[in-house]
Length: 154
Image (cartoon, rainbow, N blue to C red; front, side, top):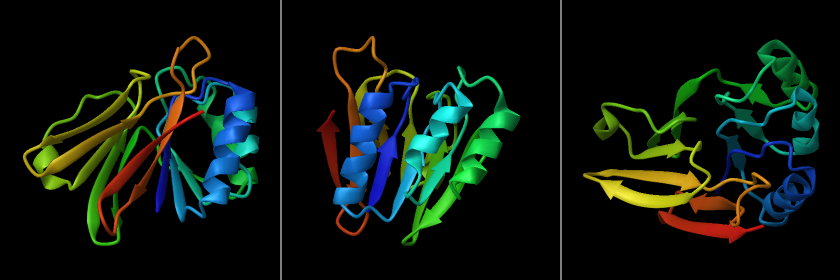
């Protein structure tokens, strides 16, 4: 199972709860889709197998990389193509992508709104965000084996 999280915007109490949920659910991998904001916030994700991409509000990328390294996470840059359980996944912060038909899944953040839609054979997912200005705060868990997605309100 994959945990999907985005736009945490230094909302520490919500981040702590999201990490607890990911651990309780024994997710295999967590993907953070950008806008963590302060590099030190990455430390709250310690104990997860986690990969990060940067968002448009992430400032000091070098410091962010250092903090991610401290928790044994991985920084993937602005976007990344992954293959997990024979599924091709593209992750990016802003929903600006082309050639989505090459992927089984596209995960993005930026809008702070949950999304689950299918375009041709590609499933596009936004987990929502933990931005404190949002009425809704959410994360998502995807079971790749059965293509089951669950949004979890935080």
